[in-house]
Amino acid sequence: MIRLALVRHAKSDWSSPGLADHDRPLNGRGERDAPVMAARLADEGFDPDVILSSTALRARTTAQAFADEFGLPVDLQPQLYAASGSTLLTAVSDAGATGVASVMLVAHNPGITDLAYALSQERIQHMPTCAIARFAWELDPSEWVAIDAVEPVEWSLDVPR
Image 1 (cartoon, helix red, strand yellow):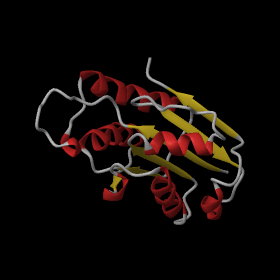
Image 2 (cartoon, rainbow, N blue to C red; image 1 turned 180 degrees about the vertical axis):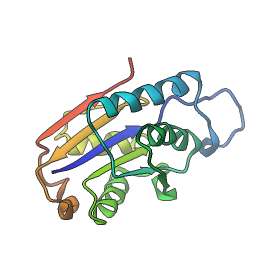
Image 3 (cartoon, rainbow, N blue to C red; image 1 turned 180 degrees about the horizontal axis):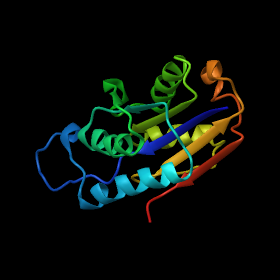
């Protein structure tokens, strides 16, 4: 069985005019939501082998909250910033090709919603900030490349409340 968690970065701060999009931090709500959602994911029994993240500050900070919960480092990947769903899928497949059974990816809209939509067979319509889409497939860790061609045996969407 292989598992994937897609996480949209937590709510960001838009209050600094002129700040580059890549450098936007989390706002207060985002700072509160990220560790809460990380704890909820851990309570559900999801245990990532690797955490991939966009290099944007808001994504890195969100990913670090999950990394702190799971005791893992964050693998920052510049190509995940403003990436399409297909680029995100490639990053997941590449990470899976190392033989891991569980991958977490922290990225941005619209790519993260596009990927969740495709992997959920069009059931996940939108990924709000700090949402987590979880998937599991009855596939061997060597078969990550097939996740977009096989319906998951389970999936869920969790959003901050």
